[in-house]
Length: 379
Image (cartoon, rainbow, N blue to C red; front, top):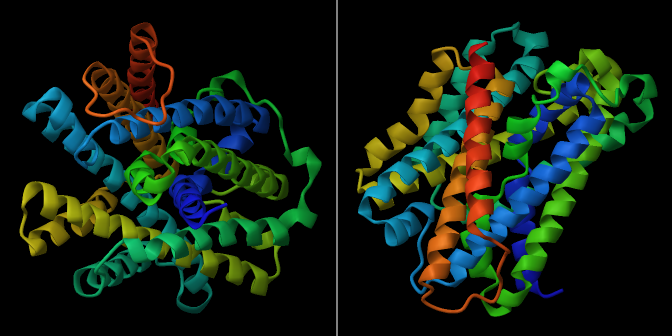
């Protein structure tokens, strides 16, 4: 495999495996591992198809854009702002999820020495990271490799340390019927890598015909890692599975091993938050022309405000963000592909099957999924 191919594969895998994986074990503990596997297969296939569709849009357009720019190009000026807002909401959802998980990990690590002060630890950690974004972070690109490596390392270490503690009785295949729809939002969030498609296409510009291969292999690798991680976590903790997964492993690992897992997890979350916050800030500066200080304040401040106002349930945040990013932005990608095929500027080396009945059917499904997640949160 060539270096561009491996780089694209690594970037896509790192984009897919994110904070969402920490929300999946508690879902699997309630809905059942078989139900989760079905969602992984179905939604993973849909996301791969969406990734391929969007890559086709990127490769059939002469000028380079991000998703809001393509929306403006193919749907007109009025479409840019709504798509940009949806994109920003997705990034804010991810930042808020990182904030919740990072605070939980830090609280568990420091509680034996300074007591339980979740709100204080989360806020202090957040302010420190915000200062790093403001003063020291110049580019997201430098984080891509280490971000992917840290997330994979966290998963591998947990699997290695906890494997021998698995109790088969903890692994329920199918939970109560009322829980069967719960995995939709979290899984859709966890298998999405739409945000990385532009960069993958750029990295593999000299091997465009292999992009589809990199997309499908990265999807398979990511789902395999995440599913094994979920099985191990639920197999060990069972009914005691925690919202953030790692903190629930405390009774089952030695103190040293547990602290090592939490530190690695916290480092992974920290790096991911920095990259996501910097990317959000860049959107404000590049697409809105907002002054850098205000862009930093909006990018870093809003997730903390959301947290202070009580948006602290990781599963709910991931579910809503997943339905929004996976569904609504997926719907945008579908209709971009429809328009790009009607007026292509150049021939794309990759393509995905698409017709209008499928486009309308999936669009309605995505809207229904978002409505369900909103209803679930409010009930």
